[in-house]
Image (cartoon, rainbow, N blue to C red; front, top):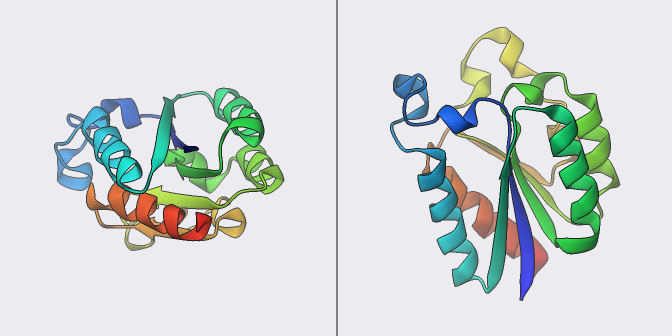
Amino acid sequence: MSSILLLSGPNLNLLGSREPDIYGTDTLTDHVETARTAALAHGLELDHLQSNHEGVLVDAIHAARADHAGIIINPGAFTHYAWAIHDALAAFEGPVIELHLSNPNAREPWRHTSVVAPVAAGSIVGFGGKGYRMAVDALAELLG
């Protein structure tokens, strides 16, 4: 069974209580379970890591080169400036899907730039928790 990696960036550990009017009331655990269920339906295992530290996410991306067929990443605020994450994802040979609960392009201007998008096969934004299933479905399609 192939394995995919779901990465969650800073502050996503606060989902369910952090700005529920923007991010909803589901917790990160809820979203990971949605993704895991979708992955299993495609015959994929799903590993998840959340970190508030950029270097931890970079290390996980490096390790994924040996262990995972694809990556789904919700980089949180790292989306807008974390060039180290960009570079690590660029070195990953499998497909990458960028994921956001909200639509950054419909929010504050500083959120409109993504340094992740140029190294992702695609971005799924603005669909709330449904985006986790959509991201897994898209990655499974890319993996064939």
